[in-house]
Length: 447
Image 1 (cartoon, rainbow, N blue to C red):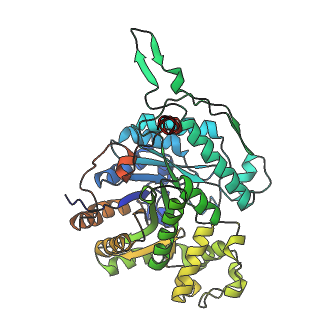
Image 2 (tube, rainbow, N blue to C red; image 1 turned 90 degrees about the vertical axis):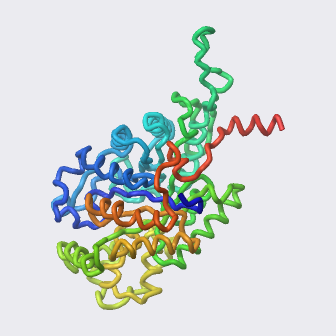
Image 3 (tube, one colour; image 1 turned 90 degrees about the horizontal axis):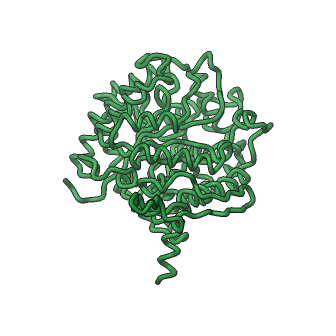
């Protein structure tokens, strides 16, 4: 097996697929979103392809028109615990909001998943910007961007302290002497900050991989700061190679500025895929899905992302650039908006064309397995990615064709594993086992 650098690949399970009309193809029954077998089938297929992890997005609100689109989702940490018990190797990444959770409870929940999975758990940190979610937690509207990220920064710090509150060798387990754990290696964190006051320690021992992997998905200034300082992996949204290279270099430099090894921060752009045995077959598959929605709905997705009413857009003209303000002033996802605007500007796309170039805010490729492998290899070798978060158009066929047709091509090119070399998600990602803050402090004192 090749010893050259290997890419990481995650499989993002977005309901019935990344295309919002995927459910209309009825590859899975309507009740699949609450069926464990549906999710374990996707996870096992991904594990057959030796992918690093499966990823579940989440939002604490029922949004959209339930009469027209699939709605409702299981709580990710509960679902992923069940999936972890049905698999052996693949990592499980749960999204949880720092805005609508408590650090202690979330730290405990994720540490529990890490123990039960044998060290395969990860937390995708999001700040949740929609008002519908805020209204489920006693708020009239979501907090401003800066406030959400200020809370998130402290939230992550508290969670990390709690995960570190037990040292790796705290449990002694000496039955003869009657000593279960060394109390000198179990620490209160005594955190007092602007948003949280948490005494600690966590009531769960340190987990198999030291602490769960932290994933971050924001590309705003606040998101870049949070991700470069604390994250092990960043799921990002760039849609052009040049933008991907620029973001990759910026985040590596930011990590270095925090005193981190930039190789320990994995940059993983999202890629939505529509795969066919020929380009014509892939395009026909994509056209069939788009036909369920129609031109108006496709364009409405663009209108929603840029914050301009659909009836004020000309489908055959470029975006109304004069009406689009600074990305920093946008309440929604800065990363998705910036990626979409950059693609439209670079290629001078009309609204109609743009609606067929992006799915769920990410780069889209409609083509053959060879074309998908080519673009993954190009970005990986060109310094735009350490790996990718794959979002097939629909499940289960999208994951199966990726595993059966794309993964073998990547293996032949020597840039993806043939088998798992370790047992934890950190090992899959090529990340070291992190020492607890107390072990680092003790080592510094002894030195």
